[in-house]
Length: 113
Length: 113
Image (cartoon, rainbow over the protein chains, first blue to last red):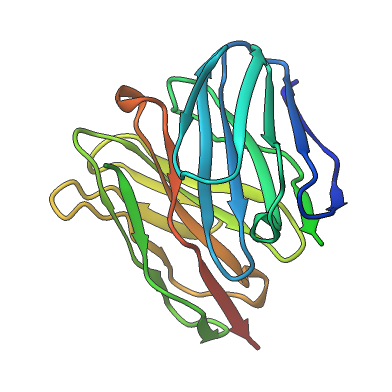
């Protein structure tokens, strides 16, 4: 079956520290992968998406970056966190033809202090 | 570029009232359209979808029709229940335009008994 793993579930990091959030997918190949941020009372903001290994599209210029070192692995990173990076981060995958639903990870609650 | 606009919430209704949540989109061609729902404390899950013009998606008493002429995909339900209280997201996926999956800002629905 198809599953998506995202970790950690919660994270508290000091300002200026690095960040690495990992997302892995099982049960599918060559998926589209996505990172979103969901702020309280606001919608899902698309941060990055990838249609293949090494292919990253950035939607919003910011302090974050993404990488896809393997077909089913998507990593969200930062070299130096800002207070404004706090939020709820969601990873998702979708088959490339897009006819079916997207699968979401459980999310990571990041608090930068 | 592609975009999705939803009516602002929160929307508060009495049980058995009629629900409409408006969603309009901007895209060239024929994207796939989705409604996702996020119940309190839970992750996003697909509610319904439509992949071509004039398609009607339906699930759990909810319906939405893909209207190419008005670029709309409004969500409707004839009689809401307290258990329908959730945040509803309209989403768009365009296979032919880079694989981006974008969401509206979400509409919070609160149904009172």
